[in-house]
Amino acid sequence: MSKFYKIASFQVRANEIDVNGKVAFHNLVNYFQEAAWLHVIDLNITGEEMLKYDLMWVLNRMKIEVFDYPKLHETVTVKTFPSGFDKYFFYRDLQLYNANNELIAQATSTWLLVNVKTRRLSIVPDFLKEMVQEINIEKERLPIAKGKIPKIKEADFQSKVAVKWFCLDTNNHVNHIHYFRWILEELPTIVHQTQSVKSMDIIMKSEATLGESLTVQAIDNQDDTYTHQVLNEDGKVVIQAISVFGTE
Image (tube, rainbow, N blue to C red; front, side, top):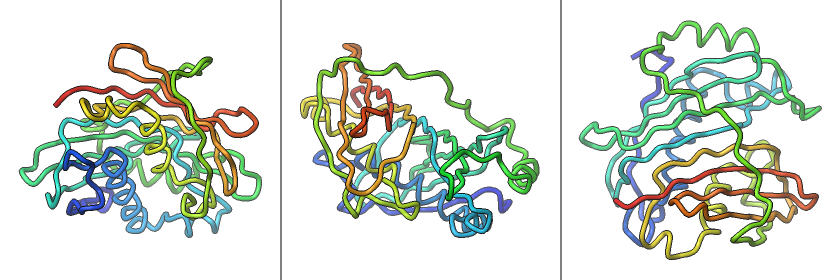
């Protein structure tokens, strides 16, 4: 297989499952993150390598669809590849398969390159564009997530979370996996007891750093969907998301 595709397998561990014995949603997303990380190592475009250009990778948007959840000790495999680019955005698709090679989840993700000194958006470098142009993925790429997510004006559910040391990643801001967990934990327990996440579209609007107090909000749209929002202390939107729930 071409170096532009990455295959990574993981065994579901005991600390990754929920009370129903299946992988918790944020841990499922963690498989995607880990596979993407392994791939950028192979391609020599890691965060450390990008620092040579004063750049860092930042996840901007991710849309995940889940068709089935793996259980304890099952082996799952992620296939991932860069799927395109434009002036400011770099795209990556991810597919999760069970041991029978059945597709059980998929995601499209949008990444930015941010200047580490100015914290401002950077144009995608030519060497990354050339890399993607070598890949023939037109037939299998997922549609890019687009459109706005409405802001929450009056929340049905709300709580505070503090950004602590183990929330941070190597970019010195909150690792996006924590946002998935925080926004879902804001929903009533009965939602998780009776349903599971079928899809989520999440947009990272700004970063949060050590010591900040964040407000996590959600509204029930009354159709098995929920709108989520995370605000910083100044009321600035950090995260927006829409989740869709359903029964197995």
